[in-house]
Length: 175
Image (spheres, rainbow, N blue to C red):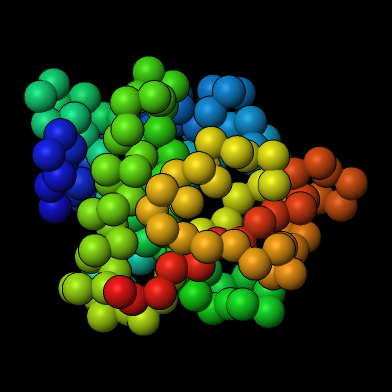
């Protein structure tokens, strides 16, 4: 898939090294319980690729069309952990710091949302993040997603007592 400035594609072996560096960056991982080790990052790529094989969609690797640089991911992920609103397909993104502030997240998210509704045939998607992650919440709102504070929740995969445990939930229905 493509956007004006990005190529959204399946993962390559060469993506694993810059992805691991991104996932080890404390600033990139500020709203997650901890940075990832190389092994955890590689395992994440393997899970993403398995979802592509199983469902036909996933978290696409993002490449800047002009330079060919890998800058992170955006796309769709089936979420099945225990929560009242699941299972559901989540739209998400994670970008390397040099890619921040260029509008890449919203550009890729818009294309992923279009895929969700027009190609995957989904009726709705969700997005969630730690309550402190105002940058991602801004992308969610620009995407047209809405939040009902009554649906905010404590993420069961974030340790109790962590300031990141409280999550906000946004929704977007098929246009």
